[in-house]
Length: 193
View (cartoon, rainbow, N blue to C red):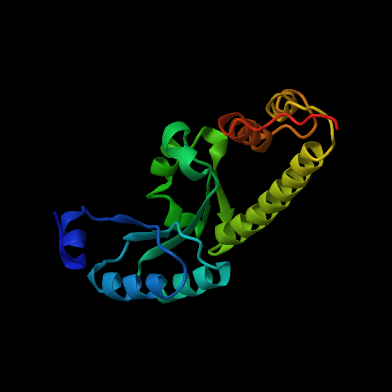
């Protein structure tokens, strides 16, 4: 077990790949300030938190002066990635990605579950757009559930969402997740009044 950054960095074989998953903001700055002095040229720092994409660009500038590779990495899988593989997007210079890329490809859900999005900051920007799309879809699904729920008809919402997950134009993992949520909560069937 290591108790400080010096021991941690010393424990790893050079070139080191260090993956950070921290809340955006001052925590990232604090960890970087303490960690960077122990890193050497060719080490790789990968930020997997929800850092604002412009902060990723600044982080790259700050760290690259020391010859350390900095990558931003967005992940679009949530808790399921440990079981089924993740969807990784990585921003950074092509030469910075070469060391951790085999690891990311191996951990991805499949060969298309990994993409180099481009220059530093791009993966966090792409993740920001992804989250906006996801939120809009969830909002639409939530409004649809409410309409069905308040329709006055006796509807099996879980069965409807199961149907929509199989061949419907709106099929995706989101209707499947809603179906599971509706089933697990024993969502009441509504009766026409």
